[in-house]
Structure formats: C-alpha cells, structure tokens
Length: 217
Image (tube, rainbow, N blue to C red; front, top):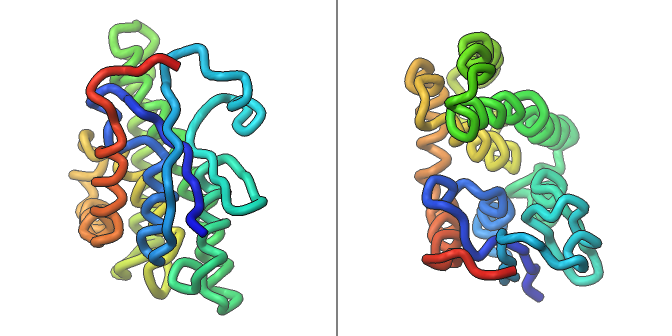
C-alpha cells in the first residue's frame, strides 16, 4: 500500500524545490516505497480539519495505513525504519544516523531559517541589516564544525542514510549564499546528495505537483 504525503499545490518560484515534503519524497524514492500526494493550498484559510493533523497547518503530513504523523524529521525516521538502506540495524550506525537527523534539524536548520528571514522576507528592515553579520558568523561556526565532523567521508555515517537526506536538504537552504562556497567540503557533500537519482526523482515530483497560480484553499 502506498503511503500518502501531504504537500502544497503552489508556492512562489523561490520556494519551489525547497518545501519540506521533498524530504519524505526523497526517502521513499531511495527505497522504492510507493507514495501518493494529497495536495493542499497554501492560500488562507486552511481547512479546519487539516489543523487536526498538523497543528500549524504546515506540510508535510504522512499517512501510512493507520499511522498518521507530522514534522518532516519524524516522518523521515518513520520511513527509514522500513529499510536498512536508510537506517542501519547496527546499534552504533543507527544511533549515529538518528543523532545527525536531529543535528540537521535542531542545530543547523534554525540558523539558516533565520538567515532566510533576514535576507529575504525582512531584508529592508533595520534590525535585519544589523543582525546579518553576527548571524553569518554564528552559522559559519556551526558549519565549520560540521566540516570537521564530516572529514573526508562521503556521508555522515559509514554509508548514505536518512541522516544525509536531512542534512543535505537543510544545507541546500544556504546554496545561494557564500556559506557553502566558502566550504568546499560541504558544497561537494550537497552536490553528492543532489546527484543521487532518488533525489532527482523526488525533486521532479515536487515540481510537477505545483500549479502555475495559487489555488484557493
């Protein structure tokens, strides 16, 4: 039985390919897990029933038989449990992958999310101009530690895993800044992830689901 991923039917051009339903799509593509999409509109108001599934009305939501869950990290781990190609049964390798999923979403992504606000949504605000230099320093220090942790390995663990899906999709949020260009190790890591056929299929599927104009809720 195919799992169902709730995604958006439209986003502005700058967000296409970056919406977080890309993460479970990629995970499904890596292990050949069939999935369908249920598309909702980002145009307010979102239907009341959707807030029963996702308290903030965001995507993705996953339905897998009788199991329903939200938050892309939780969904990634749920899918990863289905196949050792995403989550090893070796205790240490499994623990390492899980730890890096949380690290990607809790230690790396918040700074990049704030950077998007500073450089895009609030770029003309005085507070944003003042915040940007120190924010870039903060993010840079975290990325430097990530460079050290990755070392000369291709992936965060002994092999590609769910951790790399999480981290690559997070780091892509910096692909238009100097943060990755100044760190060739991370830039190459992201490129390796994006070169995987499963990523390319997931990206194509997300883009194909977007309508040219925003649809009513």
